[in-house]
Image (tube, rainbow, N blue to C red; front, top):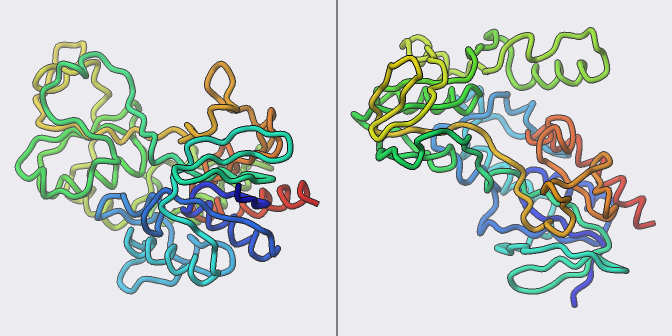
Length: 343
């Protein structure tokens, strides 16, 4: 059985950030990535997606993301190229495609079971993200609706919806960006659980991170929720000018041909895009889940198995750790804890 001090599961932004700090510490580690190529979940995002921060504020440790000419907010492909160049720049030991099917407890090591071999690791950092676990809310009629339903993970470009009637569900940045994109070819209806609030034009992801960081230590500081929910990227600003950012209240059920509200109003739709978020992707950690299916954490460490650390799953595992800059900052603390364990 192959042995290693640290096994990092996931080769996206969080896994690479952990790899950087492990490399600097000259640790014995591997990064196991299920993707066939570099880029993590960014390889699968829709074509028109952009970051909602400038490149210089969306960076992994050690090397700033280069600016992209003509794009104040870097595109999906630019981020993929950056992540690929990053792991090459630091010679990170990424093995792919390797799917981790389970992490099992052991007396001396954790057993990392993959589709090709089993690896014994003194510590494990799980950084698989959320992309493989999309969330769609339970709602009456989903099984009778005869149109097309897809989650954010299934959306690529507006061309396939040309001339269609499309409902976009969700009140966050992904919903707004997808709405802006698909509305260039389709007739759209935006549906949200609460009135969407666009942030002021000078507030981007960089400012949001700073605001939310201050709010964690200063109860009187301005909070992100006080300002709004959606960053006005150039595409979202253009959609606002076209008048497509007007939201309807959440519908109550689906019908065979569309959506309906309890008041009697209904709307036919050819497709429904659920931009309704994700859940942590953790099937490989079933051995450490409680009866409710959740893993209890002390900071980033599993309570029942302190050799297991989680990184990059949102605020649950570190402030804004599902973002590039948030993952970079959290990874440093996680790796420090891991290395202290190993000494």
